[in-house]
Image (tube, rainbow, N blue to C red; front, side, top):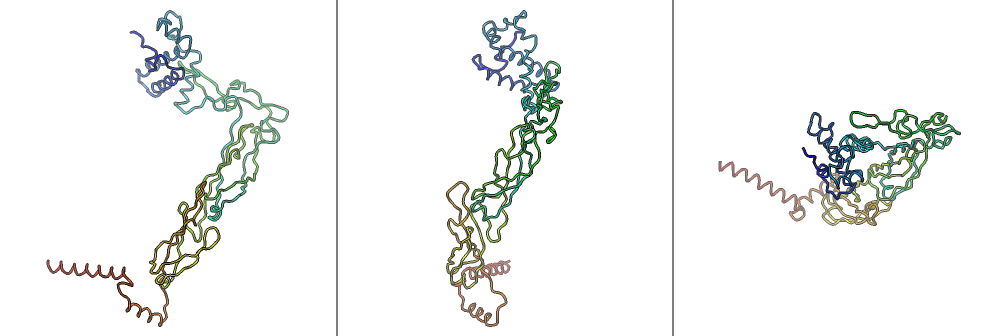
Length: 380
C-alpha cells in the first residue's frame, strides 16, 4: 500500500511554517494518543503515522529531501524516518504529555528558585471609610527572605550544588515502550540543586517567618468584596525565588442609618402624620458627615422616596457620585389622650373623598364587590 503524503497526514499545506506543522502535530497526537483511545487499533496506527510524518517535516534537511524526492528519499536507509523516532522526539512528546495530563516539564527546571505563595488578608472597613478612602496599615505573619543566607538556603560560606541525579534539570527521564516520559526529580524536588550544608536559620528553605507591617491605600468608592493587590508583598520565594503577592479583600460593615446599593444610599425617616399631611421639612445626615434639609410635599404618603442628587457614594475611578434616597415613613400616633381622640374623630367626620382619595376609592371597590356577590347569588 502506497504511503500517504506526510503533509496530508498532518493536514497542512506544503507551504506551512514550522510552527503550523508543530501545532498540527500536537493537536492530532493528542487526539490519537493510545491513552485516550484504549484498545483502538486504528488510533494506534494513526498515532504512529503522524509521528513518522512529523519526524520528517520538522527537520529542514529531511523536509527538503522529501519535497524533492517524496518517500523515496528515505528508502534503503537514506533517512531512517520510517525506522523509528528521532533523538529529540522525547522532548516534543513531553510537551504533548503536558497538554494531556497537566504536567509541566519546564516548571522551575534547573533554577532551584520557586515563587512564593500569594497571601490573603481580610479587612473590614466602615461605610464612611469606603466613602472617603483611607490609608491603612496591616500586620501579617509571612515568610521573608532569610538574612543569614540571603535566601540561598545554604550555610554561609557554602553554595548549593547541582543535583547529581538530574544534572540540574529538575526532571528525570525514563523509557516506556517506544516513547520517553519525564517526571520531577525525586532528589531535588524539581529545583535542580541540592544543599549539602543547610543554613541553620532557615533549615535550607531560604526564608523565615516574620510579622510585617504594610501600608495599603484604600481608594474612595470601594465596594464590598473589592480586592486590592500588593505585588511582591506575599511570601518570599524558596531559595531566593520571586515573592508572591498579597491580596486584601475588603468587606464593609453594616451602617446604623444608611443601606448601600451600588453607588446609591438609602435611608428611612419617620415623620408625623401632620407633617406628611400638611408638608414640611426636616434635616437628615449625609455620609460625608454633614446635614441636608429635605422638603416634604403636602399630602406625602408613607413609602414615598425623595431623591437627593449627588449625595451618595463616589464611583470608583470616576468623577461622579451616586444619589441618596430618603424613604418617608408616616408614623401613626399611639397612646392618644381623650382630647386627641375627639379631634381625630371630628377630623374623620369632616373628611371627604378629596382629602382621603385612596381609602375612599378602596371602600367603593369593596362595596361594589359585595353587591356583585349578592346579585350573582340572587340570580342563581
